[in-house]
Length: 115
Length: 117
Image (cartoon, rainbow over all chains, first blue to last red; front, side, top):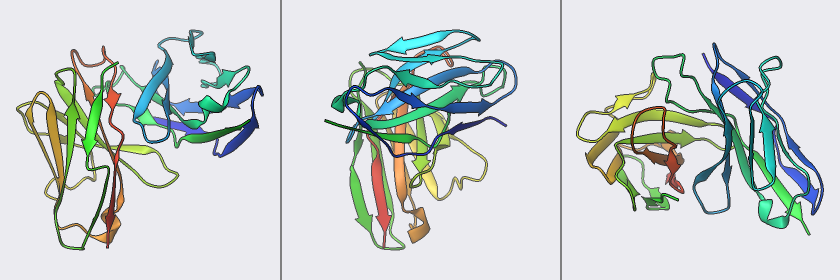
């Protein structure tokens, strides 16, 4: 079956620091990969996505590259702000399966950015 | 972006009672809604998928008689936890999607925290 593994938090950073959240996956074929963000008190929001190998998703200064060879989709941001404090979820869908629209999530990583 | 609301945001109930959680798409018609469950420090686990006007499709291991899902309109789905017990305490999250499967984004509600005493 499909699975997503991401680093456990919390990750505590100072403002303007570099952020990396590791995410690896297990899936047959060519899944689509996503990063969702959940700000305090709000629902999950799609942050970025990539649908094929070597694609780079980017949004709000965040980037992640779909690496088929290492089955990874690590999230990075060069200079974080306090407003980036949130829980980040890595996820996949697998169009190679009959229920290809289902999202499989990682456990989430809480990020706290201090001024 | 599309907005999905959930009500209530937090509920505490006694063991043996039933609890209903509502999920509404506020500014779009949701052809499909999803219900997830999240334990502390764990992944969101899909419980069931519901399409408007038809029976929900439950994931393996989810008791359909315990977790009743109704998707009576294009903007409302409800999850009823029947005869709740302490092990049902969890964070329940819904999401909604319009359009063709696999083609459109899921929009998530803020979640409902259920505590069963």
